[in-house]
Every structure is written in C-alpha cells, then in structure tokens.
Length: 339
Length: 282
Ligand SMILES: Nc1ncnc2c1ncn2[C@@H]1O[C@H](COP(=O)(O)OP(=O)(O)OP(=O)(O)O)[C@@H](O)[C@H]1O
Ligand SMILES: [Mg+2]
Image (tube, rainbow over all chains, first blue to last red; front, side, top):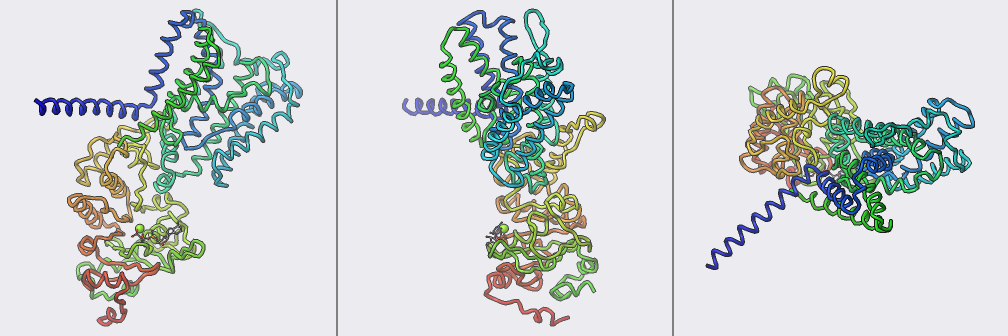
C-alpha cells in the first residue's frame, strides 16, 4: 500500500518535472513564446475591460504609437545580442532628427538630402560607439552613457534647443506621418517602413552568416574569435547598423510627432531596452529573436493603451511594465539553465 | 639535408617512415617567443611538423604547450620568432588567417558556441550559401546542406550518440562537445590539424575513435600536432614527441628512442636529454 502510493508519487513528480522541462526546453528554443502568451492574454483582458480596445481604430492608434520604439528596439536588439547595451539610442535619434530638420528649414535643403545627411550622421554616431567599444575596449554601458550626453549636447547646441514645426519642413520629411486606412485601421507609411525594417533585419539575423556571427560574438566572444569569426568587425558593424536604424527612426519620428523637437522621445532608452527584454532576448547576449522584440514593443504599448482605455491611472502601467521586465529576466535566467 | 633539422638521429625513425623527413616541414616555428609583462610564456622554441606525421607535444601543466600552438595558429601574436608554412614565412594575425591557410585547431578550451546548434558550430565562419540568387544576392545560408554535411562529419568520426545536428551545443555533454570540435577540425583541415588535449573529456571508446581519426588524417598526408597528458595515447599515436618544459623545448624524442618512463622523466626535469646520446649513432 505504502509502496504503491510512493511509486505513484514518484511517477507523478517524474511526469511533473518532465512536463516542466519540456516547457523550459521549448522556451529555450523559442524565447518569444512567453511574450506572445502575455500579449494574447493582455489583449483578451483589455478587451473585456473595455470592448473599444479591440476595434480597428484603437489598433491603428496602438500600432502607430508603438512604431518608433519598435524601430529603435531593432538596433537595441542587435547591440544586446552582442551582450552590449545602448544608452545612446534616444540621443542619436534626436541628433539625427534635429540635424535633418534644421538643415531643411534654415538651409532650405531638399528633404531627401537632409534625410541622407541625418541618417549618415546617425550611422557615424553608431560607428563611434562601435570604435570606442572595440578599439578602446570600453564596456558598452560606459561608452554609450558618455555618448548619450555628447550626442544630446550636440543636438541641442546645433538646433538651438527649439522645436521645428512640421509646417516649416519639406513634405518629404513629414511623409512617414502620412498614411492610409484599411477598413478603419489607419496605418502610416512610417509603420510600413518599421515593418520592412523588421523583415530585413530579421532575415539577416536568422538566415545569413553575419547573423550567426552576431549570436556567436554575443554568446562566447573568445570562442567566436578562435573559430575564425572576425569578432571586432562584427561588433563594429552591429553598432553602426544600429546607428543607421536610429537615423531611419528619426525620420519616422518627425512624421509621427508633426515636429522636430529635442524632447520628442525622452524615454527612448528605457523603452527600447524594455521591449527587447520583455521580448525574450537575454541581456547576457547570444540569445533571442527579433520577432520577440516586436512582440515586446507591442506589449508595452498595449499596457499603456489598454489601461488608459480602461480608465486606470497611468501609474499602474509603470507598475505592470516593471513586473513584466522582472518576470521576463527571471524566465531568461531559468531557461538558460537548460542543460 | 632535411635530417639535420631533426634534433635526433634518423636511426630512431622506423625505416618505412624516413621518407617523411626528406620533404620540407609543412609547419615550422623558429625561436618562438611570447611574453606578458614579466611572464615569459615561451622562451625561443623551435618546432617542426612534417607532412604525414603525428608530432606529440607533452609537458607539465603550464609548460607552454597551449601557448606554443596558439602562437603557431594565430590565436596569440608571438613577441618573437617566425612561423613557416611550406617553407614560406607567414604572419597569422588572427585564427582565421591560419584557418584559411589550411591549419585547423581544436583549442583546449574548445572554441564552440553553446547557443548555436552543432551544424552552425561546424560551419562557423565558413558558412555555405544557397545556390542561385538566394545565396548570391540575398546571402541566404544553405542550412539544410550544412546540417547534412555536418551529420556526415560527425558520423565519420564514429560518434553515434549525436544524432540531431539542429541541437544546441549547450545541450551536449562535455565529451560530445569535444567530439564536435574534433569533427570540425578533421572535416576542414587541409594541411595541418592541431589538437590540444582532444581526448581529455572522452570515454575510452570515443578516445579510441579520435586516435583512429588522427591516424586517418596522417594517412591522407596531413601534419598533426597532438597535445596530450595521456602517455599511452602519445606513445601509441606519435611519430615524434616534442617535450615542452618551463617555456622551452627540453628535446624531441620518438616512441622508439625512449620509453614512457624516460619521456616523463625528461618532461619533469628528473632526467636531462643528452643530445649526443641520440646523435651518437649518426
Ligand atoms: N594570455 C596569457 N597571459 C598571461 N600568461 C599566460 C597567458 N597564456 C598563458 N599564460 C601563462 O603561460 C604559461 C603556459 O601556459 P599554457 O597554457 O601554455 O600551459 P600548458 O602547457 O598548455 O598547460 P596545461 O597542460 O595545463 O594545458 C602559464 O604559466 C600561463 O599562466
Ligand atoms: Mg594547455
């Protein structure tokens, strides 16, 4: 009798554990599953709280609001995959935005040329981060903390610190704020561009040798170097590509905010890091999928939007996001223990 | 002529193997030196590796075995000395320079990426792209082809316990990881294969397979450097044995010239290798 029940208990706990391990394994292989589950659950919850949440109009607004952070989070994902962190996301974006707008307004420069210079400058700013990380061997946290201040200062000094309204800018620079509607769902060209960026970078990360090298460098830099991966070059390219993406995001940001203003996106750093982390990418590098970041960015915006539609105080949003970040990092720690 | 470069008499080489040493060494180091601050890692070491031979490198912990092969394969930039490949002076600045020249290395700390799968590890930094525009324009990887060929490489090594090439390396046992690293070197080495303690984590059966693989590679004309603390393996597989001691070379012997006990005595400094003892016969 007692043997039978202890057998059953052993069997039960054995089955329990293997089920848990299977979950752990699945999350290890597909780290974006848990954010996806959270997203679906929060969609259902917010729709119950306020049925207006699930309408095409709300969705269009939600997508437009999350697009800029989602774009910045692409660059942040690349950097975090290499076990780095980029605190200069917002600074580079604002710098590119103010330079584009100022050139087009004061200099009367054609929009396309101003865009090219702005994006080029953002790319150079990323390259500078990369040089400091790879050549001076400084920790990315310190490098980007420094360039955060430097780029912000340059942006303010160059633009005089004042906003430039969209009406003073060529139509080309505002174009990403324009859009179209599909049955009540309003999307902007900026949103389409961000989706395109996700498709391209997602393809590069998962389907090309360079993508493999990014993961390798982030996971085990010395092993990657010994295996023949040009680690420093890959790192340099990651920071440079990230800068380029911030430049493109700056263009979308002008369209979205209807102006170029130095404090257009004050929480860019934390928001982009939050999206990446909630999306299941490991802060320790080498693990994560870009699709997870997109889901992470949508989750953050879903909470902001859903809670305000439900008439809940915005402080609750902060609380919820904070909890999500801690849960996401705990899940990451847990799945990294898979042997 | 070539024999003069051997620090031991040709008498100690079995007759059928002597022709190996008529050719030029495939890989040589002359006066290899490396220093970190005041720490001298290598103190002017000479080493020659011939095509079709297994050169074992033995020595105590910290004798400089790994440092020596790292200086030869581009993992470290030596502070002095010259490396020759097929008689030509070469300067490997990075490990991939040596790889491109046909030298494959299994480093002691196993240069594998835990987060990537087995096939990705085997093909890391030499990925193959799909045929046609998908590969040439979009740079798309030929994942299926690489997985298939990776499976063949692992199979060639005779490791049956690794089946799924899509498995992440971190889910493998220590020995299986070592097998992956060895399979990679065996699959891609075209001139020289360097193995730094390749059987340290392996079971008896798997060690035997690696030794068989080393012999196969030797048959196909490659030069192999084998670092090992396992003296029976060394005396079984090696043609010559380079004894590394305190950052220098204490001498080169053969399994025929000295037995294991003598070899270990030289390695630990209990006995000095008297050069004319060897040259006497010549
Ligand atoms: N990068 C480095 N910086 C400083 N010292 C080093 C470095 N690499 C090796 N050394 C030193 O050089 C010496 C030789 O080390 P090495 O790893 O070559 O020994 P080994 O013969 O391979 O030993 P083992 O049998 O334990 O693998 C050691 O004293 C080590 O501390
Ligand atoms: Mg060693």
